[in-house]
Length: 321
Image (cartoon, rainbow, N blue to C red; front, side, top):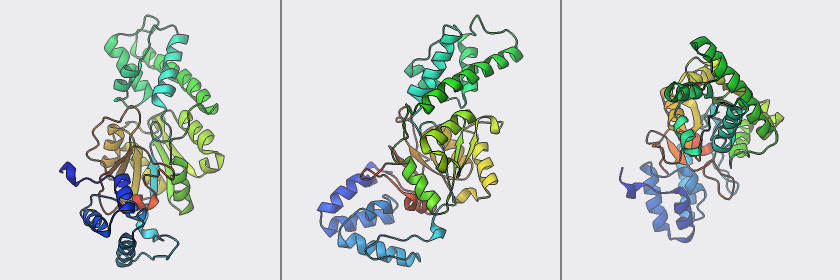
């Protein structure tokens, strides 16, 4: 796709608010060719775009509530929003998980430190235990590590358990904040009867701590968690997303996944789901060409990037931002 055909939603909104209806006509034409999202037009204040939205939604059987925004029919919404955890709910990797791994290595006097760049490479491996095992297999096992495969498996499990305890302490102290827009989008989904789940390769206790302490117990009680070793194969394998859709009793094709990495994106697409990528610190330069939409974050007003209506629209079309 030619670069000139891609329209950034914030850039369009800014132009539309100060331009003639001719600009909006071009934007509408681009929309019909799947280049910008309907949420961008919702932010436009010109009469042309307002009338376009009304006509568009009337054609689709969506009622317009004049002066009070758009009312979207339930059938146009996703049946479930499935969030990855690390990098999506919280940008945890560099200053959360990495620090906890290093503190664990130091406590055990293993002589191992993962710097920022190295950890970025290790993130290409799904799962903390798998990450440590692959690293030690490649660089050599520490002198204090056992020699047999079975004992090494137990050794890795003990390291990961301690690392999880240290990470949970960071979360309980709320030293790592939610990413912008996460709570807003979850509240919007729950308020409209859309099921919400978190699907992560991270340890279940760590994911539960993030959901409980950062989203709060009331939200946590409505969010199902699929994490850790709940499936035998981790991302990019689709197993965790297929388990989530089966357990929730929903059609994968009507689910929207929010991910931040190429391995998570691959898992979501292999499960037959639409996937929005919100880039994180470690994944900003990854190639998300197969994503249905890519943003820097979910965003809170006035910097909101997308909402539940946009998620529903992806079930019909693909957008690029």
